[in-house]
Image 1 (tube, helix red, strand yellow):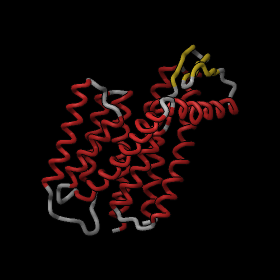
Image 2 (cartoon, rainbow, N blue to C red):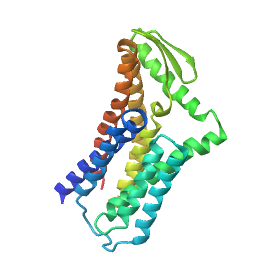
Image 3 (cartoon, rainbow, N blue to C red):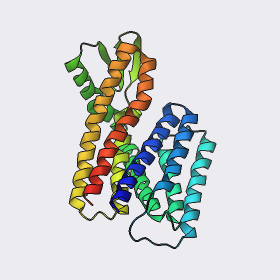
Image 4 (tube, rainbow, N blue to C red):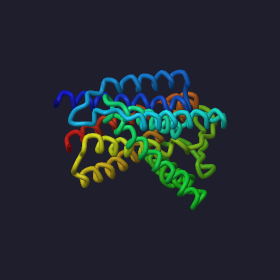
Length: 276
């Protein structure tokens, strides 16, 4: 049983790592690589070893619901000609999770996916729809005061790079090449925070973690760790862009966040297994 749990931790970690990598590739990298990573993450779900009691009967309702969610998401993006983003990927994951929940073999993994992706979607809509409807500049202010300024403070304390703020979310480099870079969107670190919170909620539900105080404390700690990890990531992007150019910075931008997410997720999964 213990070995199975350890294997599940590794497999779930790999699923989320490849899935996150796919999301980043879809939005900022190679679509082909994104598709490959997405298929690998789906294939890894078959390696989950389910433990404990779970319902063995399948449910056509959840399978149909999952298929409808997938079709609705695909139809919307085809009609709107949108590029796949994080919300689309999580909606896709939600549909797949409902399909898995409707089967007998992967019901509990489907439950994990439903709560993980559902938590992300709810929090995403709260931050990017509800709060922005109350204050149109909410995301811009968040990026400026909680990401751009603190990260520049770190850089200025450790280096003598010539980086100027020219707008709320924009900085100008005068390094190996002159360039203007927008520090916003994925750079805010909100996506990673929401994904990590979703992992905690999904795993806690799937494994029936009973100590809610520890789970809430873990959520709070994860947010703090993810926030400072993102500041370090952005600071490193400044350094790479300033010293090696924007092309190299964008390459690091696509992969660095994924690597940091894997490291944090591994620690998170290990802690979740210990507090069960």
